[in-house]
Image (cartoon, rainbow, N blue to C red; front, side, top):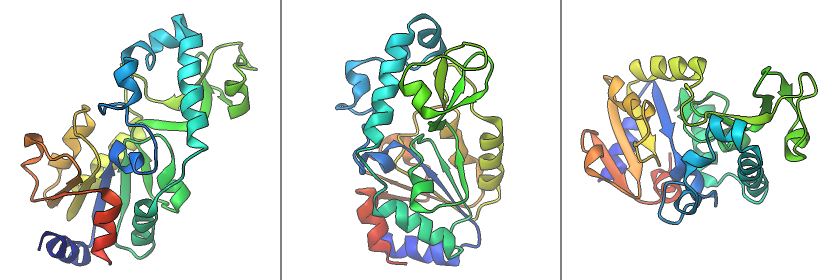
Length: 233
């Protein structure tokens, strides 16, 4: 009955926005740093994913992100990513706002994507902000323009979210008739505030359903790919 209701809501909505988190990527084999088995259990992210680590402990920072980037070459978007891209092509989805930095939504074919935490697939200089090629970062080269340290275009702890992505996502969610929140623990501020900004219906899809998610109009417990496959829209 839950799946049937969600299907009805999706088909009747004229403006559906989707917010995705780490759970969307873990089903592709990308480590979830917040889970019990995630890397962050062994290495506190606040020691590596920070501007302080970038400036003061660059070798540690570089190795952490180099490993993450190289691991992405071993995995790919799963069928759930492709289902969401298909929904967009058919006019069922207006926008995907994602906390993930892996670019899997775009690789699966989604066009309207706001990356709330940036992208690990592009590189810039931390000092002068000039873009750089991935090979330069992987080879631990310095910025060709100013000699500064290169970094992925991800949001580090303590940094602000990209304003264009944040405001675009917020505006879309405020006007949405339906908001699907998929695979996020809703622990990270301020993204966890987004689902509550809509006057439309809200749905939460995740393996772990906590007390924090009770305000949703509908909750669906399960693996993301399997839930999206069951909808058969």
